[in-house]
Image (tube, rainbow, N blue to C red):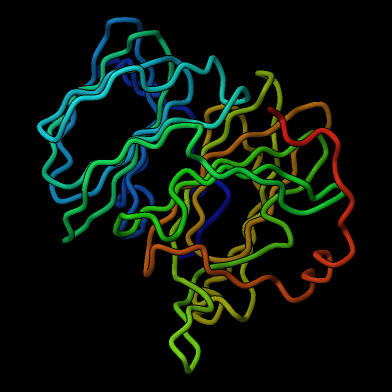
Amino acid sequence: MRYTAEEILIRPQSDPKDPGLILSITPESAGWDYISFQARRLGAGESWSFKTGENEFAFVNLSGRYSVASNRGEWTGIGGRKTVFESAAHALYLPRRTSLTVTAEEAGEFAVTWVPTDEDRDPWLIRPEDVSTGIRGGDNVSRQINDLLPPGSPVHRLVLVEVYTPSGNWSSYPPHKHDIHIEDEAGNLIEADLEEVYFYQIDRPEGYAYQRVYTDENSPLHRAGQPIDALVRATHNSAVLVHEGYHPVVSAPGYTTYYLNVLAGSAQSLANQDDPQYTWVKTRYTRHDERLPLY
């Protein structure tokens, strides 16, 4: 399949039958195997219910405060940030065969994601103080990373990362890809085959970012005669789907870009390989960007 800009950019949606829905992605709509994703909003006191079925599931607060009641446990006071730019998120991981109800203690927005699994893991509430944060890159390729559900977490497939890209900066840079599962002779993972969602929020409503998704001869679709080379304008509450290829991002001057990355595939990993044309940037762009960390 040849993926175009129109097919990989998912804009906010409106559904009169589901007024709390901001955006929805399914394996069928995305054309991939694993990731389902929704962004949703609730008013104070409102609830949303879900059954995970044969999937592992994660809840991430974007704003507001929530309680979650389920057949696996109950949690209160999840969240509290007014926007994604104030602190790291809370994230709640729940295993397959869980019935849950999310209730807004304070109005806000949240994201949920789920992927198929045949493994049983324990519920896990990740608090902001538990989240490893750091600065990646330098100069105008500096960005802040919050590892909500990093590789090595006690889950099956899901990886969750928050990224903040200041005005005019680049992230996911040098361009990298993760579309082939490659191990070396010792069994060390060199690259994983991963689907990825970029869910965007911008610190001001008129702001935006650009994201390019492109393949070269190292990507399976390219070798199959179905190359990707798409440039999309990502705005608040939109999402970009990365099936294959390299996928750098740049934040428009004057705006700070946030995105929540959801990844799943051949390993619970972020193993990737840079576009060899641009990997030299890692050794040259090293100065500290004084705007980071944001908090």
